[in-house]
Length: 152
Image 1 (cartoon, rainbow, N blue to C red):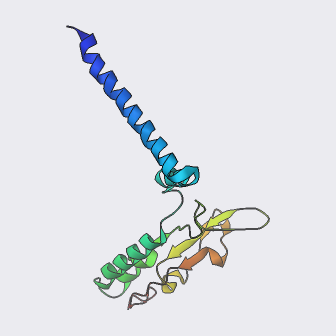
Image 2: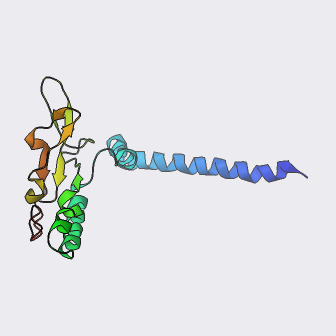
Image 3: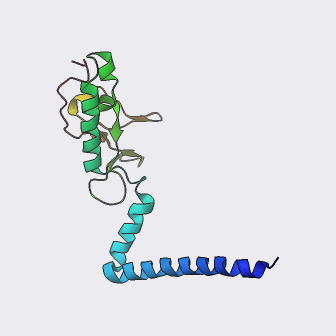
């Protein structure tokens, strides 16, 4: 069996793929410059660590509201995603979710954005033995037509 003939096309394809990737990077560099290229690469690889996009969070809240409205009133609604899910959002586009830092100890608390102001009432945010300041809990202003405290 002649293995050299079978290896040549495979190695040629690998080299061709590498050349295509390099060409795409070079074209992207010349078309957008290094800053935009860095941002694009950061969005691809660090998107999950830098938080949820605010527009996406609002859409998810609206969908969660629709689901919660279809649930029976009371405890079932208060335990819904609309009332309990929070998002970490980067509103200033620095590549990291918004945070509040406690002065002397330098501990970061990533701001938790809930769907509505009603959903934030009574929420306590702690990390270890430290309680986050009150401005570490915010809302996206989505009104659903029922209270998260009563479900009505």
